[in-house]
Amino acid sequence: DTLAQVPQDYQAASGKWVGVAARSTVFAYNTTKLKADQLPKSMLDLADPSWKGRWAASPSGADFQAIVSALLQLKGEAATADWLKAMKENFTAYKGNSTVM
Image (cartoon, rainbow, N blue to C red; front, top):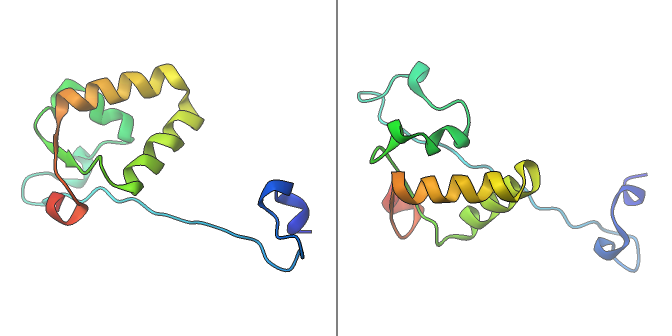
C-alpha cells in the first residue's frame, strides 16, 4: 500500500525500500528581545518591513533551498518572488546556520 503512493520514478526496482527525506526548520529568537506573541505567524510575515534588520538566515545552505522550494510549491512563483525580494531588503545574510544563531 505504501509503495503504491510513491511515484514510479522514486521507487526501488526491487520494491523492497522507499526513500524518504524529512527536514525541520526552526525560527530561533532571543526571548529577552521578542516575546512569543510577537513572533511571525508564518515565514511570509518576515517580508513585512517591520522585520527589517531583525532577522537573519543562511541562504547558501541546502536547507534554505528546501524552504524556498516548498514556498514555491505551496504559494506559487509570484508569492515566492515577492518574498525573496522582501527578504533581501529585510534580513542579514550569514554563511552557515551556526553563525546565524
